[in-house]
Length: 253
Image (cartoon, rainbow, N blue to C red; front, side):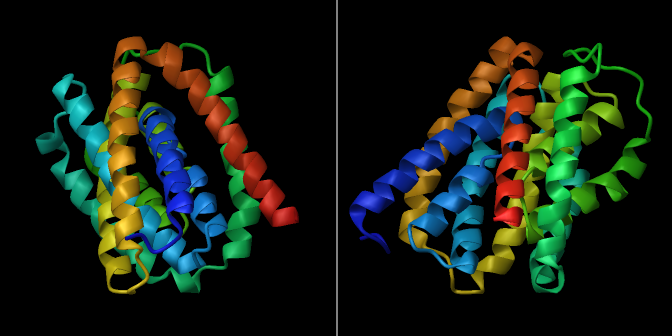
C-alpha cells in the first residue's frame, strides 16, 4: 500500500499531524516532515515533493478554518495568492540553480532575527496598526520573494509571511497568521505542480500524511483563533528558534 514499510508510514503520519498543528499557528511544519521523510529513506527530491503534497492540504485546511472564523476573506486575497503560486512554481523550477549551502548558512541568522523580533517587539497584539507599504507594493515585492523561497527551500516560510504582514502591512498577529496560511497554501500548490512532473512524489504515503495534516491544522487553527496572540507569539518564537538551531546543526555538522 505505502511506498515504505507500514510502521515507518505510521510514524510519518504522526509527524504530519504534529507538523499541521504547529504550522497552522506559527509555521515551520516542514522542518518536522522533511527530516522525517529523509529518515524514512526518501531522497531529497522525494522528500520535497511528498512534503509539498501533504503540506498543501494542511495549509488549505488552516485557511478554511481561519476564513470560517472571519479572520480572512480568501476572495479578497486572490491576487496575492496568484502571485504566491506563480512565484512558488518559479522557485521550484530554479531550485537546482540556488547554492543550497549559502541558504543553509544564512537562514539560521534570519530565523533568529524573526524570533527576536516577535519576542522583543513591544505592542505586538491582535490589533492592527498603520501599514508601511501599500497592498499592491506588498503583493509584488514581499509576496513573490517569500513564495519563491518556499518553492526552492522552504523552512520558515510561514514565519517570513507573518513578519511581512505584521511589519509591512500593519496586521495584528492573528490576522497576519490567517492571511499567511492562504499565501502559504498558494506557494505550496504552485511548487507542487512543478514537483508532480518530477515523478518523485510518494502518493500513497503523502496522501495519508495529508489526512493527518488536515486534522492537525484544523486543531491548531481553532486554538489560534481562540487564544490569539497569546499563543501565536510564543510559539512563533520557539519554532523560529528551533528551526534556526536545526539549520545551524545541519550546516556545521
